Length: 630
Ligand SMILES: Nc1ncnc2c1ncn2[C@@H]1O[C@H](COP(=O)(O)OP(=O)(O)OP(=O)(O)O)[C@@H](O)[C@H]1O
Image (tube, rainbow, N blue to C red; front, side):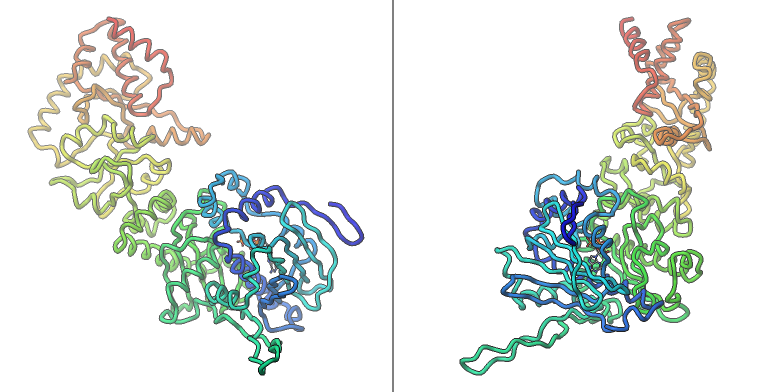
């Protein structure tokens, strides 16, 4: 910072400089959004003050009618957006308009590619807010006086790396954002152009947005007298309070952009007014695309909370569980007190029942989309499926509904796309099948090619192929769906239930008995490495596989815990061999060291197919080479 007279120079935070540069270039084709962003900020500033004045009405006594005014100055080439909201102190100006407080900003910036179209989309998700003024202005001046203070300050910048702060004059509280338009952007001086942009973007803003009335036509030969009277150019009623039949889809979409700062349209929304025991209005949106920081469970989330139409807080996370962190919207309650705080919300029974209601609405919105617009739902699932899966473990009371919304890859089409629902699966179950089978693995390929699937493929039984990181954890919370048990094909004894007929059962028992001595020989060599050795019922083409015992942690879960740096208990696998396989027959013919080598080779090979890697790949390859040469 440097100082001359009463003027101080400050540098923008590095991230702001980068964002400004990219934004000005990539949003050029959508430049009129600057007005939406600045009006949106002005409306937020009014909301914040309205809330504060509930405790201290003196804050607004001198100027009680909230409004936003847009004026132009043809000669100076400026457009000014003024509000009588909460205003900013000198420190606020420096921190709010010189830094980006959002976490993950630096990481976000590294995702930008230089491709204008892609970047425009990404920046749209990120939200550009105040800085969007620089798309059309080569200089911005902000004059602000915080409510309840006597001093005004001004912030001036050409958006290139520095900004200046100085003392200023402003009669009353509030903020003026003055855009000094670039030479080629003078079209925004046109009152009609501005009115049409406001009509498009700001009708739903609950504060009146005012402009000067058009001048009265003058007598012939005379210049028209400029008007000095203002009129509201938006509807200025909060959108969710209007009746549904008065609101167009366009209105809903614009409102979504206002509250979410997303440039893209939402996928769908639900608007409900509830009266009776509880009175509230909810307007909840499902975005089309995942935000850049969806994976950050700490990211700000939740709805905008209003109490009796008064704005209370942004990001009220108490009304939606973490797995629905992508939902945006507004909740307006008549039952909560106006002085409600985050702490009060935490313990309130009203909060709990509102939360239950919001979750039900979101889930039923998703069910409707899945049923009526399967393509949209498929897109949704690609964007948000992994987050929805968290719900299986987090939301016990809605588990069956969440499970119904799940989509999986499966052996039905052997394709990586997750598009099979549990209902689809049940509809295709073969005669006698009473369980839903699945496999979890490190990758889709490992799952799809797993030897554990052989008997299922042979019998034409579908198996769900799960390979997202979260799958193992999520599915462990889903023991059954519509009274059908979910069963892992890599865990426990394979119980094919009614899928195995009496003859097959007898044959299997016979084979098990005959091969008991071989099983014991294998067990002697493998000793501590395995929990048990058994004749397999799952393999038809492979010589051997490993499975985990019923009720024990699966190998996939143990790997996930280890990769997350957690201590996982050592799980010893059950080694299953296929006595019909020529390699197993060959092994059985050996004795001494040769039998040891064959056994270890079969075991390592089974481990490799199951996990995709080995603890000691060197020894495995050496042993394999030696066997090949023999
Ligand atoms: N008209 C205004 N009156 C008071 N404060 C303002 C005004 N405009 C901006 N601010 C302050 O500056 C901050 C930064 O604004 P900016 O638009 O860049 O980000 P944001 O509104 O927090 O986020 P985004 O718009 O991207 O969601 C705001 O959070 C607010 O505190």
